[in-house]
Amino acid sequence: MKSVELFAGAGGLALGVADAGFRHEAVLEWDKYAVSTLQLNKSNGHPHVKSWRIIEGDVRAFDYEPHAGKITLVAGGPPCQPFSLGGKHLGNEDARNMFPEAVRAVRELRPDAFIFENVKGLLRSTFEDYYEYIVMRLRYPDLLPRDGETWAEHNRRLIKHHGSGPSSEHYVVEHHLLNAADFGVPQCRERVFIVGFRSDLGAMWEPPAHTHSKAALLHAQSTGDYWDRHGVARKNRRDLGTGYDDGRLPWRTVRDAIAGLPDPAKAKQASAKFNAHRFQPGARSYPGHTGSYIDWPSKTLKAGVHGVPGGENMILFPDGSVRYLTIRESARIQTFDDQFEFRGSWTESMRQLGNAVPVDLASTVAGEVRKTLERSGVWRKRK
Picture (cartoon, rainbow, N blue to C red):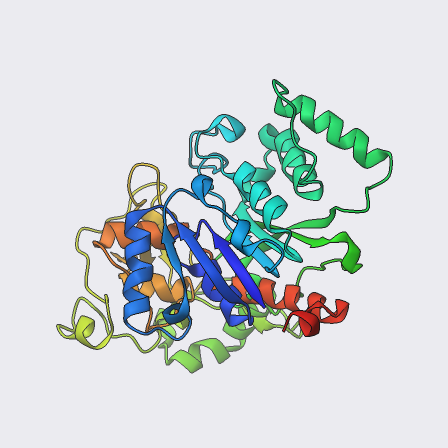
């Protein structure tokens, strides 16, 4: 099943999609550092990345014609800064808004399905009307804006078209807010997923069921199972509340993620055995920057508008001390495997990681898309 990956960044979404069984025909990214990371892993023979055709350049200049009608899935995370809570909140007026390019890819490639991911900030009331417009354009990618037509005018025309009864050629689109922690990622990271299927397939996507829960983590901690599993002494155990057994697995914590990695501040050879596991000095705690508690899922790792935010990229220990996460620890929190390497300084690598989609979350979402395609018969036909 062939796919095209847009706005690939360091490859989190692309890896998850590949893990679900899709084969990338093209992986597009313009940022030279992220491209360097992808090329490094390709040259290293990473199981997924080694076969990718990595294309560095502006997606707006890419010609989809050679792939038209041959692609099962288009996936990507259009740059989120226009809609991020930590950004400038310019939305559709931001030059970095790449949703129009996502629509163009769907229109020209005509895939069986698509997956687009973005930040929770896209759902803010400030962007409500434009978000509706994004979804409507993805439903009817062939209904182009007219010369001189504003996006609001175009949206009203799309809504009118939709109300008159959908045309024979369109996409059935669903959009859901998912928390990565609910799917086994050791990080509280809420992201919007917009998923669509070509209407003639008769398919409709349902979001994956939660496999992990906060209640189960609190239950495992209150019964002592969690602490015993990690060999944590009673004096270092912290009462976070009482949960219950809801039949799900416990949320995974920072401690779960970094298990097996030596303390980088004490182990001089830590980075030799585990790539990019080097101690980063200078961490300190202050109001609003208190770090991610080691026995809870990490806060959302962020790229940062003016550099990497300290609080989200530090570990908070039971004694109140903090230290920066290493690149390898951050990669584990984003569920990249230990074989995957990042090119660049600590700050640059953390920026790439902060922009990435957690690999395991991407795999879960893409896996549900694959199941839907299998039920529709597309998987067998395309395979």
